[in-house]
Length: 326
Image (cartoon, rainbow, N blue to C red; front, side, top):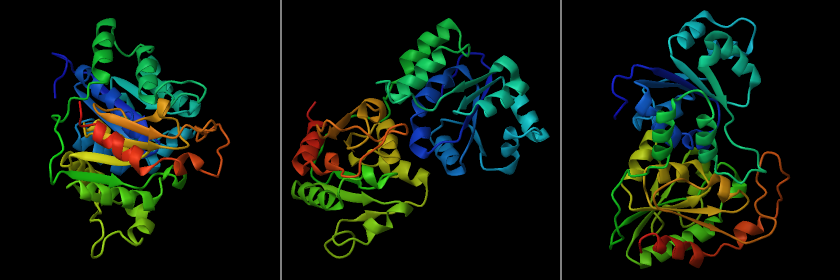
């Protein structure tokens, strides 16, 4: 990891959101690493372990620790105050004005807050939104801002490779919301099609996808092999060893793209203009329904999910093959 020569500045970030929201900050944090000798994070423990494993942060503190809850009270834990004071800059990814006031009372104008994502009326990708918002802060010098902008979307992590007989393809059929899941039957048929082409598809399942594990055609004799990693760092390792990836709009898809893996991301009710994975080779497959996208915190999403039903196996397979044609 390279840093600005002579830099001794230390940055503390805080993030309270879900895994996918945390991962979309990785390009931004990677861009900041050239200007800070140390970047630490207050976040969920598993998220911190992943970020540390990928050299995004140096150290992490569990956001669910009782002492950090004191930032929302009139009596902030003295150890929290001492921790915040020890950093040169503090960057909050949060919607909370209360948290911002508490930290600014400790660090003054050396504390900054960025909303985790833009309002749904803005057709701006969330990672670009974070980067542009950061550029508007007094966090970096003018020269540093120019270098930062150039580095945020640099995805040169893994060398490009083509598909050959026996190439491994990770399929991740889960998602944070069941509404963002393409049907399991489609994923199973897709896996068979990949096998017919001489590829080796494997299902990647997390603890929240036990319903998928129990479905006919998954695991068992003649079924598609299943990988069940025990941690987020295990998932990252598995993704770096695969030749291609197919999944829904999910945190794992964002992670695969960040790691430079060729990714096909299936989008239904969510907006790929705002949430598509950021990577060197990413294809998004979606339907053309007028009512999509509708999956936003400030919108009333529907329940029919025709946007997912209309996505065909041929379209997903075609997009996957297209990743390896250029």
